[in-house]
Amino acid sequence: MEVRKNVVFVIAGTFWTATAHIITAVIGSGVLSLAWAVAQLGWIAGPAVMFLFALVNLYTSSLLTQCYRTADSVTGQRNHSYMEAVKSILGKRIKNISLCITKKTIVLL
Image (cartoon, rainbow, N blue to C red; front, side, top):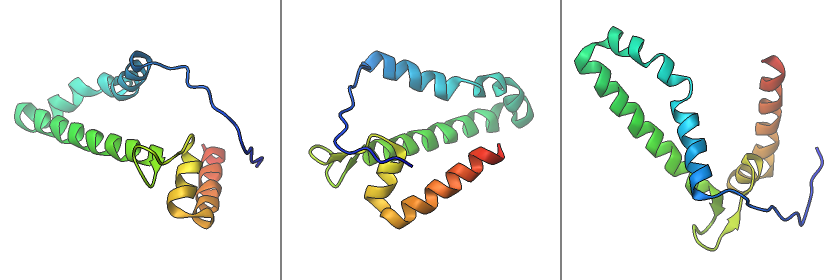
């Protein structure tokens, strides 16, 4: 894998494009099975489970935003990719292991 140093990324997105991408990712395919899931769970458990998953989504989104900058959330080093975040948080060895697992999973799909 080629490692590029001193690469400057140009951020062209805005708040609204980021919001649109998040909404399409969250709503995406899950909305197609929502009616069936609520029908199977019922009127009490269905909304309760939806609320639980909304909390899980909020928590994981919070974790992802904390991983964007390492060490300090305001002035820390930016992680522009998943692998950069893994390397800066867990170290080079775990990054290589994660890279191998990710590549093998993609090949198997």
